[in-house]
Length: 186
Image (tube, rainbow, N blue to C red; front, side, top):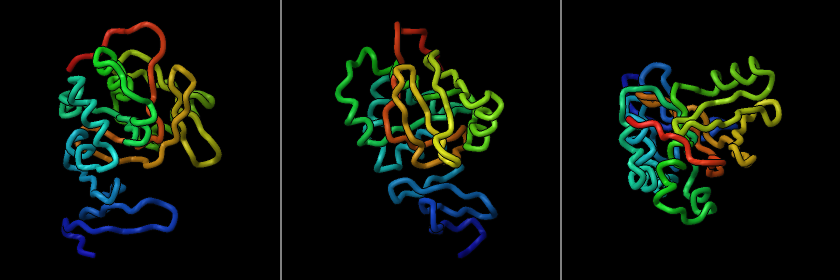
């Protein structure tokens, strides 16, 4: 495999295929598509065939622009199947729901593990929507994320590195609870 910046696929025994970039920069592939660390979150998630419903919802809600910004974000990105299981949602609640999936700051799996350990098992992550997601361990190696309604999502693909943050693919659409809060703007 060429190291000088050429893109190739490497399969490992217990992980999803990863895209290899020059040096040691590696990203998991999503739905067979390379996720490039020099693209922003919206560009990478838009390239994923597993996230077309999420991308449409992000655009319809007006939240997509924030994922092109220069700040650092962590996105818990539900797959198309997870979005479909949630059913149709009103346009008025869409921005709130999409902002709830975004945590300001860059939290790869190592940062999440550190926070979970420092917090004694339950790391509280403040979302762009103003709500809270709880990250915790499910067994010795799997991190799960719980929303305010008690729904739990497994992280199916960890650490998709982007120039403005991290994407974690989750198997469930997480939702805020309670009254609407102020949604963070760009």
